[in-house]
Length: 415
Image (cartoon, rainbow, N blue to C red; front, side, top):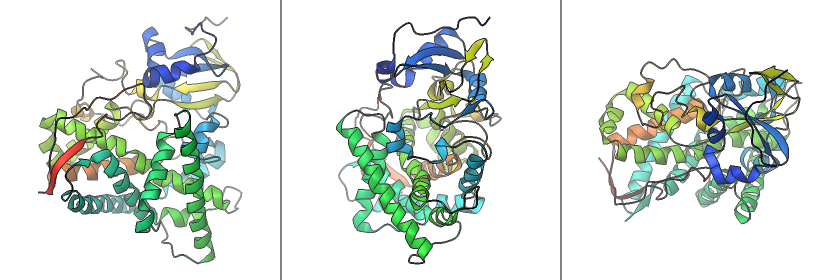
C-alpha cells in the first residue's frame, strides 16, 4: 500500500498560485525535501514535481502527455491552440523536427548577426534620447530581430503594433481582467496577421526564403502528409517569434546583473566561454517560466505516490533552477558554476527540460542563447551609458517577473 505524501489540507489552492507566484511549488515540495507533493487547483487533484528525478519523470513520454494539460487561458494568449506545446507521440516528434530544422549553425549565426545589427541601429536612436527604458526598447529590438530572422516582412508603420501585441500575449496570460482580455485580442490579431502571410507564401504572392520560419511553416506537411491549416501554420510561426520577444526580460535582468556584478563585464566582453556561462547563469538565476503542466498517461506509482490517468502534473521550473540539492549556493549569482557543467537535460530548465529533438524541451532555447549572447557582448563591448539611481527589485509573486525600473539608461552612446 502506497504511503501518503505531503499534501495541502485546503479544499483548493488556485488562489495560492497568484499569492505565491514562482514559489508556489518550491514552498511546498522543497520544504519537505521530496520530489512530489499533492495539492488541488480549480477543484482538481494535482501532483507537483521537483528535483532532477521529478523532471525526468515529467519529461518521460511513456508516462506523461501534453494533451489537455494547458489551461484555455494560456492557449488563448501565450501559446495558441493546437500548437506544438499540446502535442504528443509521433505528431509531436514530426513537428519538433520542423522547429529544430530552423536551428542550423548557419541560421543561428545569422540570428546573432541580425541581433548585433539591431543593437547598433538602436544605439543611434537611443543616443538622441534623454532617458532609455531598456525593457520597453528591447521588446521592439527583439520583435524586429525575430521577424527578420523568420522571414516576416515588417512595415515601419506596424512595428509598434506588432511589438505591443506580442508583448501583451506574453504578459497577459496570467493576468485577470482587462489585461487578460487584451492578451486574447492580441493573440487573435497576431494569428490573423501571420495567417495572411502564410496564405500569400502558398499562393506565390509573397517571396519567402527556404529555411526561414515563415516559408517552412507554410510548406510543412504533418505526419499524415497534409499541409498545415493556415491558422495552425500561423500559430507555429508565432511560436518562433514570440519567445524571442519574451526574452526581453532575460535581457533586462542581464543588464541588472552587469551593474550589480561589475566584475563580470570585462570577461563578458572578451571571453566567449565566459559569455556563455554568464548567459546560462542569467537564465538559471532570474525568474522566467514558473512551472509547466502535463497529464498522466496511465496509472502508475512513483516514489510511493499513486499517479492516476489524466491527473494534472506541474513541474517546478523555477524551483529546480534554485534547488540546493542540484546547485551549490543556488541563490548566489555565479557564472563560473557552469565551467564544468555537463549540459544536463533536467537540471537547467528555464524554458523546460528533456531532449532537444525527441522531447518537449523548448525548440527555441538555442535561439534564445544566441540572441542573449549577441546582446550581452554588444552591451559590454560597444554600448556606453550611465545608470541613474533606480529600483532593480522584482517580485516573485508577479508572473512573469521583471525589475521594477525596467532598467533606465542615460547618455547612451557607441563606444
